[in-house]
Image (cartoon, helix red, strand yellow):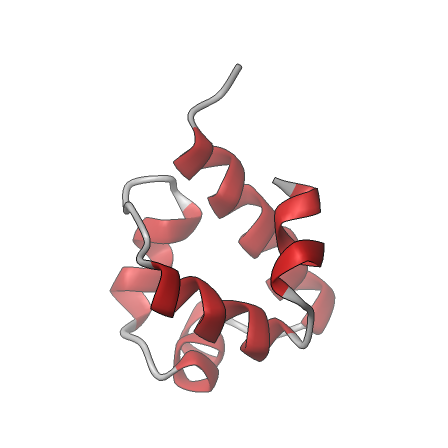
Length: 70
């Protein structure tokens, strides 16, 4: 089974693509740096709970919905 960070990153990327926004636009929506979002999507970052919540809000989904995709 893939690392949780990789699975989370893939779920974020999939949802971001559904919104039709670039990493840069999405980072602005989250209030985070674009390079940080890129690291998340590549599974390189161990994301804090606070940032996971920010990401879910920017994706316009609940935390539980986001984690169902993970």
